[in-house]
Image (cartoon, rainbow, N blue to C red; front, side, top):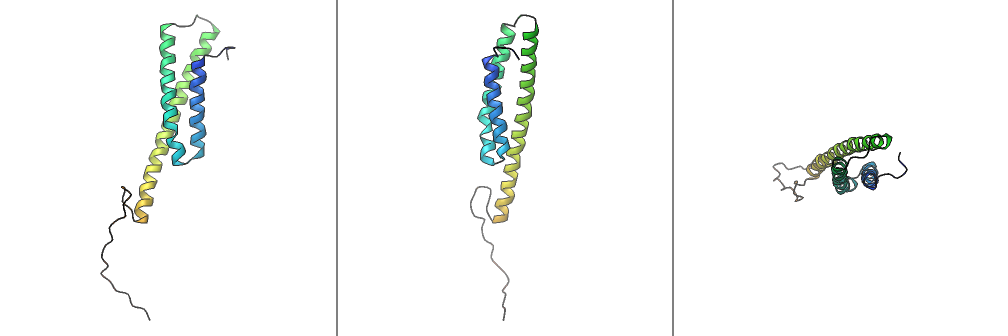
Length: 123
């Protein structure tokens, strides 16, 4: 790792670390909180890529290290975005299952009661 890491790399890494932490909490709210950090990480990575293509670092071990870090950040971002999407989809589907089992519509309204056609007498 270079002695003076690129501040944009550090920023992207911080956002991705927050995404990982939120995904480990495994709650719908925590998963939803990953979306802004994913967006910021993607924006930061795009700016970093733009900077590197506009003013590439000189050839040498520092450049190779920087390119490896950018490649790793892209892979991490892609993996975490997929995990977040899968987590949100799981929560959405599980919500529908719970709502229908509890007698609620997807809108959150109570499902209409159907008229009973049977009478039960006991005794």
